[in-house]
Image (cartoon, rainbow, N blue to C red; front, side):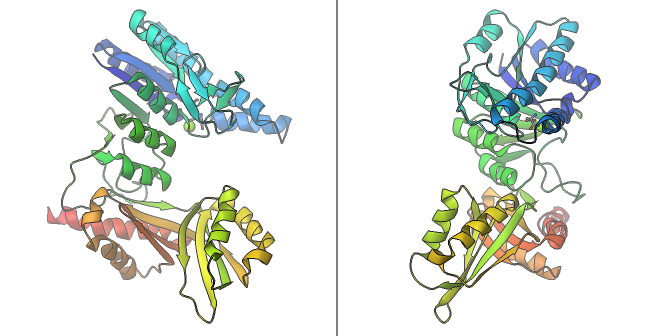
Length: 409
Ligand code: ASP
Ligand code: MG
């Protein structure tokens, strides 16, 4: 008998029929003798609709009241799911985030889980032998106020609960049947991965392959929670996320992903003296602007340029901060562009295969796609390209790595 945490996303619980389908998956798992905890998201677009409702009343509501409102979406899906399971004749209880022991910091709207007190859930599972349905995305802070974990946070609720309960498995049910080598809507030949490492999944999650909330992957890695991503519709096996995976020698990468949600800033004509980079990036860090790729040009006649990328919605803030500090940083001008995208290949195996980056650049060259910036890590190579080239870049890179390999098999 195993303890299994199952998480169901918004599309999986969108209406009565789908909720009954989810109830069937949960009770099938329970019937096999397992203890089951299910963490649910709000139905369909409920959370977006609630945000709209708030705006109608007050364009600037406090974050505390927003969390009070947004947490209700998950209460609806969970109580309905519990009713479906009751109707099937199984013992079940639904719990809100605070009843299930989620304690967070006080950061309304984007709270971090500090601990999960599992007494209640354990009692329900072990002594009452009930199926436990838990609202995702929420907890309470030290003032006993409801907090939410940030959009998409139910994945993180599920993983945190799995870690706290020392569960045998955490299954993330969604509307795709696993993690693919590229977005299947863009690359029809993309295929599902049987397994992927936490680190690869983390890179893909951050790169906008929106399968899992990236904080949930970080947490799964830290607490060694066995994850599986699978579809609530297809009934097929999904993708397992774990520490090490058996990799195929021939294919050193596990996925190609793009991120269009970035912007590039270039500081042109900086003085070529020590301390400039420190000034720029400590200023940005102090103001919570995350910087991704950084490129510094070779100095010429006492000046140099530094370019870097930030998330698109930080672009204006970053530009303003730099302009406001022009006196201390001293530069000629700032060049800003959000017509760019980051395209990356990710693979734990690439550290041992030096030709991978070259193969990626070759594919882009053959397609006539210009590279603006490059960055590499042990398991990732990213390039910046013009936004209009991004989709095609993903396609030609995927073709270069997978179709040739497929043909050779
Ligand atoms: N319902 C929340 C959202 O839409 C949390 C989640 O779905 O994970 O962001
Ligand atoms: Mg959602």
